[in-house]
Image (cartoon, rainbow, N blue to C red; front, side):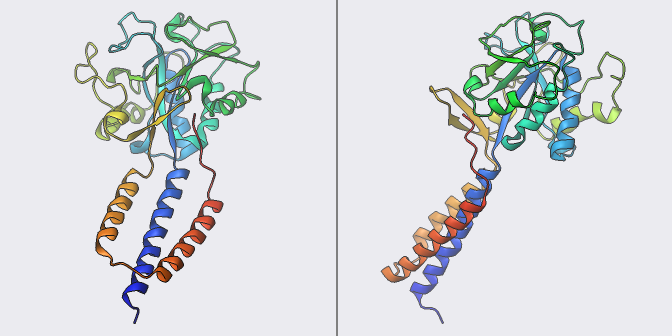
Length: 310
């Protein structure tokens, strides 16, 4: 039978294994909120829903692509008819490791230098990309590189400053720091809407996704006319499913934490363990620490590198 010191050492090892496994899962599960704009948001929402299903294998309840507005200088509620110079965009919450694949899907929506809906003109329809830290994001090179072999000419990525002009006829895309120009959810009647171009009569199952995402708290009614409820700048942020981090230069950002519940559980277990186990001998502690170090080396060396998004 093990003495109390040995039992304590084993308990430490078990807890250490759980903590390291949780940390590894967190590092590999980092997600990022990004938005893309290219003309009418009805069309690109449909395209990104297809991309979520194909790239990530998401079911209805896991889908995140919603329409909205961003990249205007104002901080008030953004609405379809408010006259502000925001861009129509679609926001997604996706694994950082999949950003390049979604960027490829985005570049594939261009027709030459322009959008498919060429009758939509003006700054509200400009090509736009929003992500934490904007032009300083470490994800931006992947987004830039994803266009090669997809578009007929290379697009320049330019820093957006808000209220920027239309990109029609010019091979460039405005890039916004989503910390400074956050996504504002659009009206619910603009979600999962049929397109007005040929082949834009989407299945009723697609139109019904509005109710599905409302049930999962991804969508809310806004304060906009004919929508009338609580304005939502970022549904995930308001529901505490986003955690804060920092960008170079002090710009705040928010990233979904894939292991927030695991971290809380680990913290609780740590507190309980520290108050319940008795003092063990230095020898037992040393063995436990050596074993812990070995486990850390094995797990950290075998997992994917952490992605620093800024």
